[in-house]
Amino acid sequence: DAGITQSPRYKITETGRQVTLMCHQTWSHSYMFWYRQDLGHGLRLIYYSAAADITDKGEVPDGYVVSRSKTENFPLTLESATRSQTSVYFCASSGWTSSDTQYFGPGTRLTVL
Amino acid sequence: QKEVEQDPGPLSVPEGAIVSLNCTYSNSAFQYFMWYRQYSRKGPELLMYTYSSGNKEDGRFTAQVDKSSKYISLFIRDSQPSDSATYLCAMSAKGKLIFGQGTELSVKP
Image (cartoon, rainbow over all chains, first blue to last red; front, side, top):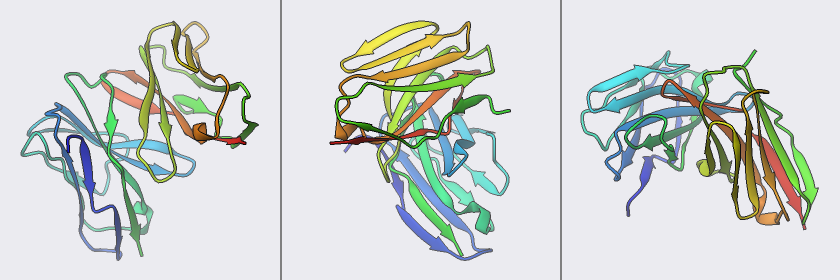
């Protein structure tokens, strides 16, 4: 089905482990985004990408790494997970400009023990 | 001070009520204004999208933007239990969306 998907939907890991969250979109959208959502903070931008091989930091990038070798995929890696990274992570994509409507995936609920 | 301020609620209303949700902002460069609806354990979905000042209506929903006051609103008429969700305002400038905290709305039958 067309759309934007995220995997896994739920993940429990331990402090210090590396974790990769996957995001895939079928619209060939140029822009892709990673957000985290926490109580009291709303949605905060972690990283975004304007096209394959072009990425940039958002509001809260520390502790995260992204890559975008293909237009349709935008994985987010936590190199050494910390408890403060326990959150719900949303991937989003938008069309030709970053001001276009963003379409969100269903989210990944990550717990770091 | 946050760039976008939104009362987190929660807001509880009876079915059929008119609901008013609001956000204020400080960055005069914002040009695109959006409202997203997020059901529990789901991703946000776009509800309304406006450019610059003015009103936009879509069924029971009306979005208002007042750039002179740096204030946006979402009105829901004849609210339904299915409208129970978190509503997030979002604003765009220089390519990034800035979200409000979201207002949790509950419409009681």
